[in-house]
Length: 358
Image (cartoon, rainbow, N blue to C red; front, top):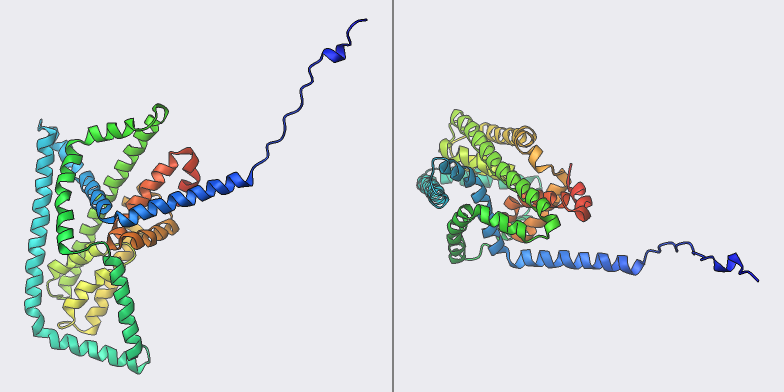
């Protein structure tokens, strides 16, 4: 009797539908939260070391074009790097020396109009109390809040010896970053698997270009605001206008607190010499220049490089200020922009890059 053909057929069952496991998803998110917590903990407790390294990286990117220019005239990279670092140190020493002399002169002249400053402050406090804006108990609470804010912004700086010790590493780190630039970049790329090295190379190049544009753009904006402020303060007869003008211009670059910090130097030196109308003019000038920088200069010089939305920038300022204080405010934007570049080039992290973007 012939075999039944039905019996010889191989019956293939349809594939079973894929069922997602809630436990796996919860484990995935739990590991992410633990990883973020570990990274934040390392940033918090390793603040001094990380800030010194990041500041050195930013300075190295500023000096890199000067090193490349000197190498075109056949100078060795090591010698060109040493000259660039020595030039940077000379600029910093000159700036500190000039600032110290101007501050000493200001403190020498301060007693000449200290009474006027005291009278104006007393008058303001009396008016505030009359309008029930500031009572003695509220004043004490405001002082305590201001103290807490200053403690947060100054955290991590430690003692003077720690600051000097940390700052002493910066010139050496900058020199070795410049003299070993190509080796560091190629060695960093070699840390990744073969199929990811091209992506890592492109990502490092984009981060380098972003940081250099960020530093140079901020320098140009600070010089522009400082020059305009100096001219305006000269017209208003602000004492030490050539000093407080550029100080106000560069303080305006500080994220979040820039406009307040930029108003402090010209208003302080003007309290004993200028009337309320001139002080109001100073406030309007500083605020106007800050708005021009924020809405015109920053988008023109840095908008295409950073590509961060305002919400992401504000949140990053809050997080890094909590972690590193004042240093976190200054480093928050380049760190967040670098993170976005990395996210944009890692397939699994692209949604986070899109969230940070414009």
